[in-house]
Length: 528
Image (cartoon, rainbow, N blue to C red):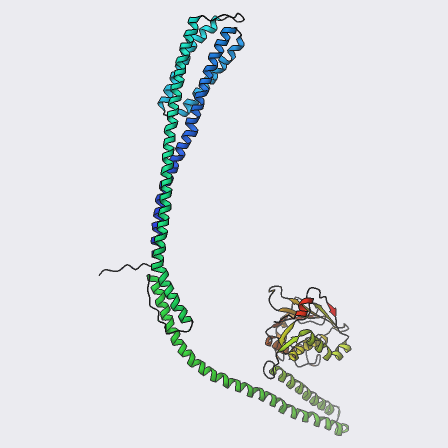
């Protein structure tokens, strides 16, 4: 059975990349060979032929200096004229060595150099040295014609050797230049071929990807968009490469599952709506029950209190000290029970019945709380200080927020140190970790403090750290603060790093009012 090849997107990509890679690799190899040869020829011209030609000219100049020096000495008989002759021989030897060092396997160049050296040696031995020996220093003389002619003939032969040497060196240079030009031509041709091949490969790859990948993906994306718009009846038909077909099949399976889940969700939503309605009705009944129960419980307590007080008033003179004490206990217990019921009712109502949502200035709620505590503040001599930025405006319940300030400030005065007037500092600052987040509000006092191990326990309803005979209260105040703050979307905690008393921190999301924003930069702490 013949199996049809079904490449994946990765397969098409690998095929295109393989073709382009082969083209680039072949071009790179050819280019590397040509560039290597081009560098070799360039080095040959600049590093070998060039220095040899320069040395050849230096060699000729050195021999001409020798010939001129000998003629000058023969005419003037001045030994100073022989100095260029001696220096010329040294320059001749140096130039010849340079040519040999760079000649390599160029036999013509070496043969030309050997010929010049032999001819130069013959000129010196047959003409220059005898002439120098015949001249007497300080006694000028005229060179006879035969000697002069013999020297001219020898040096003319040397000039012919010079021409032959320069001609051969020029041939070497021309040959290298021609090869260099050929290499450059081939290099340009290879680079052009690579560029053309890459363009062709890119065009072919674009066509292949468009046909094999882009169109199937576009069709799949269009189907997915229609499904996301709510048309779950759109059926996805797999097409294109193997992996795209697999994705399309998976999306189709997912669509079918979504359709099934949607039907189940609609049924569950209908049931949930009925349950939510039932739960709402049940909550309303519970709230009503709590309200009625609190009143029904308080009525017997009021009777107990009233009758105990009547008994004490009418039969007080007939009761002993213990009887009077028992009646006082009963009255106190009934009163504490009334306070506890009222606090519990307040706690249960937070965020449930008669909820108010309004634009609230926290500074106003703080003023109201301070006004409610005016008597306690005067009796304790408490000092309340506001620091940091202005208190922000938020959306919330002003009554509940006033209760937060009232409980926190009231606790600070209740749990004061003996003989030390309460000092309560209220601070407002923006969150350091999140500049766009809520601001942090702080209430700090100089009271007895809360041990670190009880930092979480104090927010639990009815939890007390001290007996009722030491500090009054029902143990519900901080739990009420926690519930109110969390109801407004914030959180409250005790800063255990502060050791000079107790420091409460809480956050509430808010919207800054325009007049508050204008004063943020210039606001300083002011005492209340």
